[in-house]
Length: 450
Image (cartoon, rainbow, N blue to C red; front, side, top):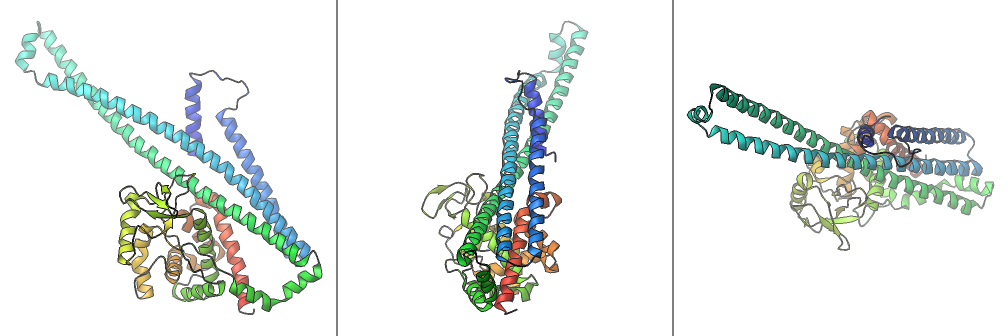
């Protein structure tokens, strides 16, 4: 897949090749580099697809200890390959960001150069404008000189218009490049977040595999007894802590299920799917830390331990909505924790509570939440966060309750939309939400004794 960044890198490389002799004759050209990247990604995708087939095949077989261990090991291998794939894509995005930054710098230099030329032309035009017709006629010895002066003045005016149009065009292009850079940084931020989830999932699966081996000590009979003990299983599920970012007193899974089921009655967004989205969002939130806004003008702040942090909140988008939300709820905006930015990416933090809504998004939904609840909502309140997430997911068509619509709603919740581009780029996020949903469906059935 040829990306915008690749085309820009190719163009820049060709420009440089016009002036530089390659240091080594065996260095890869940009086209070769891209072909190599495409080949690596294709090989990874083929291997992932093969492992998915093995997992599906094994899942259809009798549930035995050996099969469960085989499934877990294949899932771990699949996640490890997903991490490698994400790393490759992150490297490519960082190359795009470097190229766009270079291009922005060059365009800014061109704009400044054109401005200076324009200033000199305007100065000359001003000087010519100060001269009267009589002066122009008298200073020229012949009528031909007079018309030559007129022609020169017209040429200056034409050149002035040309420079003005060029400068405007460069400025528009510069704004477009800055928009591209923001988009590329946003993509990188999302890939880093997905990689965080992938690494967590790999660790979780490895831990499950180890626990399974420890509990059963490799004995098939012990594993079958473990499967059969549904009452013990339900008790363990009910008492399991349901971790949520921004909630100091986390509920048990049983309590979280009750909240989600109550919200399902109001919104028609399925409880296990809602719980899965909140789990995924909180897993991201736990890994980016906890921050506080300290400077309204810049959006900068500090961490929970007092360390200075840039870009805690986007000043033009979220600072004023955040101040409004906190003050309406009687909270101190400077001691209310929000998510931190990811240092390696340089994006913004500012997401609030378990649902990880950014302030501007909460403002857009606060009236709808208040109508359903019957009173103003609070993003840091568990019940309100569940309701807010469900309302948002409902607008993303999760209320249709099919795998495809829920998967697409999950991707949109994370990335803003479910375009084909985002489906390809953020496939892991959607897949992981639906895998968690499936596990929660089983857990809820166990709680209900089904």
